[in-house]
Image (tube, rainbow, N blue to C red):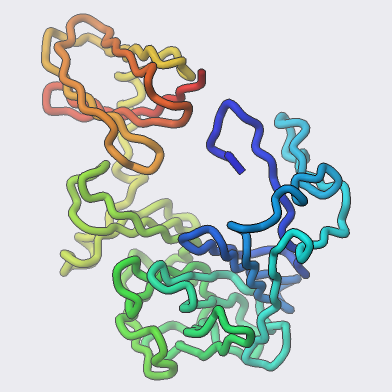
Length: 347
């Protein structure tokens, strides 16, 4: 909790015991439900539904005998818990192992991806890895909050029979889904209960494994793009951004974030002190008298402020002391060029 509070040390709570390594996690919009997919040496994956986090008895969880503790942030080996016999039921958390289409708790493959419908938490899609086993690589449930959810294959037509590493259900359309596979991203416009009649089509960006997908609405935020965009993390081909709806030519629509990155930006703009208590200085190189436009965004991409100032020489200063602690981003326009950087406020 409070993991983005830079003035506090986060505390990690154990909320469930699972069998196997945790390979995938999805959290409902209200933060109450977590789906966790596991696997052991490419087999014996399980799917867990963890409910009740919002109203859990954190007074009990805060007992130092059972909570995860971070005692030394200088090492990766700092997360441990004292009492392995955590009683999640006493804390008011419900943990349920899902029954797979095999009729067992194991899925025969690693559970590599889970997506929750942002509009309907009872609608989820599950992706499986590996090439062995009898199950398909993608399943859907439209009654995922019931005591015994049913999972149906939506491999349908058009989707490659290969591991699914990431999944996403559109934030505005429950029938629209994306599957990040071993060979790129596939899209379906008729998920949500259609089973074997589900149709998929390949949308790119390349024949490469896609391990992460995130949909964000950037309208009136960090971009001039209207509507939602999907950001992809690939294996060996960097990060990509995609805005599907207005795109006709797939090659023209995908943009490689890595390819478009301009390292010279870091040489021309520097924020100090960073972290700061609120008074910010921007160091520029060889700037003549000119008007600057500065936009400040929070970590959610929400625009907090817009400032116009004339810049002369090499420094631009302003006061953000009324901002809370956290991470912020500056978008600076000078002479029709844009520069951006990140800064931290810590009081």
